[in-house]
Image 1 (cartoon, rainbow, N blue to C red):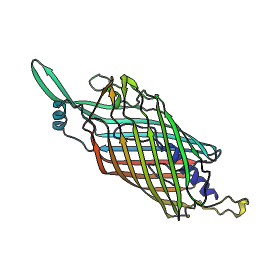
Image 2 (image 1 turned 60 degrees about the vertical axis):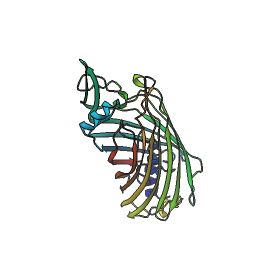
Image 3 (image 1 turned 135 degrees about the vertical axis):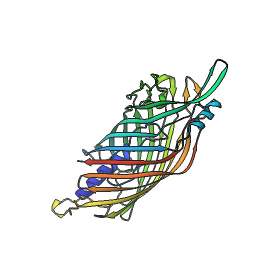
Image 4 (image 1 turned 90 degrees about the horizontal axis):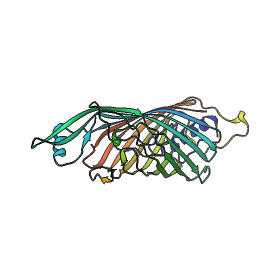
Length: 347
């Protein structure tokens, strides 16, 4: 495999490992990571390669389909604990290391910020019932670290499918005591961290195509009881995606090792990939104090186009997600759109 393809594979493989955990609605999730080829949201079966390291700074911004104060107050009158916010943001530092050619270990550390949280309030005073909206302000802080591993059990297949198993754990390292503008502690669903130990498991498939590739993945995150006796809903994400190199050296999954470095062609110029994915997401209902919130959770389907620019050891990406269908229960807002940015390197 030529040097440029080695670097591309390292970056793409770290993305496939770090992009293993689902993100849903306004919650932070076990993080995403770097890429120079492969999907932007889902995972691929590619691995980093023995002794290789990949790093990325990433940002994901989700804009909800905001509900009016009148709507939130009306839901409060129905005893539905509904909330809204202006923006949900996750900034992630990710790293991956190739323990062997077929086993990659990864770590992601997020910083989570939710802007202008509002929620409906139902109260009784002096024989009067009041339905109103409370502006609680921003919640921000370090989120939960995620440790993940990916084992490509097929080995590197130059002519057919590659498959990998994904496993990991989200650790309770994030902040869980953030205070709102009223001096009250945010509920766990609004905290940067969850206080829970959440196992992660999944599978990823990759199939080389002429000057590109097909990728499919499915990942499940099991939520356990965390801070304030709250168990957030389990999360699942499935994705299928296509990658096509539109400029620069051909994306060649079939390139083999050159035993003589002198005969290995150098392709250190810029490359540009186009990516398009379908992403299905599901989140289960949450429990607080053992009480099930029947209006939490939901499911959604997104189309996610994007571009990735590679120059030498560096890669930058820009992508977005638009909803095709959403069935989000009343405690949460629908998503209007999402944006993703990334800057990574491999060595």
